[in-house]
Image: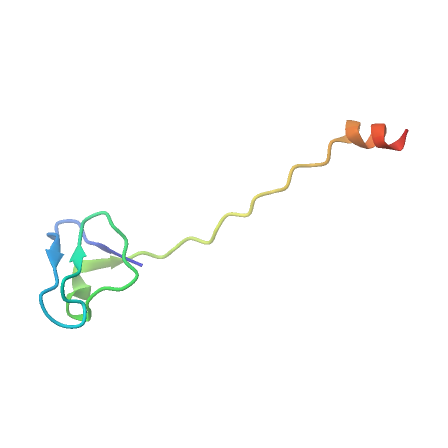
Length: 66
């Protein structure tokens, strides 16, 4: 993923295979024009955090045993 570097102006591609695409500040892009790649920071996606499952309710286990 890529995001425009701070201080880089927003722009629209005028030639090449990405003609007409606009690149705005604060937006992440999967692909950027190779000729303008220096204007972007590469954003590394963090691995999703593991969510711990809640512990089973011990009171419910006792009621089920009756």
